[in-house]
Image (cartoon, rainbow over all chains, first blue to last red; front, side):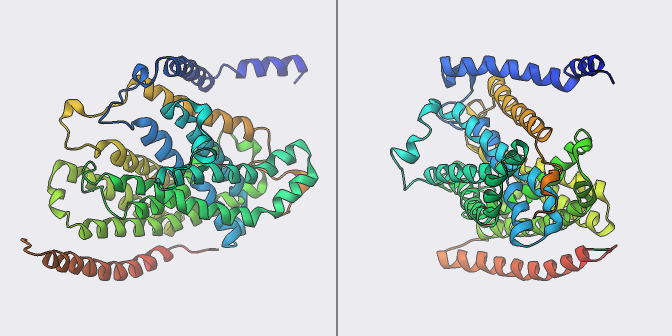
Length: 392
Length: 43
């Protein structure tokens, strides 16, 4: 292909359906951003005194943090448990986690407002008795850890060998630090809701909420690695090296098996939570039916599908189970933060997100997808850099 | 079921929790065997 033809092909490739949809979402997001920061929360959201936390917390933060758990689950499987066969999956997982957490902080700026004051709770006035302080501190430190864990790919791309080698030597320490921080803040996000026993429906409220959030985040992380790998497999296939492609099915089978067991455990502790609070009678109500849909349809069913898929080495079935689990985690976080929250209020006082809120959530997700594509098409994410082959 | 004292309530709920936990121990073993069976090649 001549240079002129190549340039012409590149120009054409800019106007793909994906790029056009992404551009429309980005443009709409920028308009809502201006409205939010000039007109305040009331200009673009349906938030009020009864519902101060909406989709920006329920989706962007709670789901964002849970679905970014693939970083610590994959790196701990590889570096702490010594499952080196999953090494090819670490960099995509770390990049997804890093972008996920970065966008959680970015989205929080919309909800909290005055983003230039974001460092205040950490450096100026610490509210050490608040769970939110603990979450904020952990997210800040973990985002830094994820950034450092991601930097070897950037340094290899830039050709900074010395500093790359120094950071690689820190991998195990960073992984352990990441697991500790994730354990702390994943559970603390659940603990936030233990302050509202009278507002959250009894089927979802439990003193074990921190445990539920932590265990479900492991399922979310493992499933998200499979799900994200499935989504990027076709468009990024030309960037994947032999090691990644050879180990891909093994990673899906191994993670599918692990996720099946953890989902089984999650289902078990959810039933124990139900028995501990003696909430059986609520199962016969409308909320009970929805609770059963959640734990049977989005916990027990994917666990079983994962098990069948792992037994029969059925990769497509495991990928479907991963998608179902990811969707189930979103349903769970939506239930806790919105559907079952303020359940006793009359329907006219209940919260439903406005178009502005939905636009910003789509805007944030689109930025994440574009950033992932931008980085993974340039840096050694799906392949090993030729200068560092076999160095792990 | 009616409860007249806190002890009644906890005796009931704890009793149910212990029964469920016993069931989970058995179920987890069976589930593990189910999961680890099937077409095993290299893992």
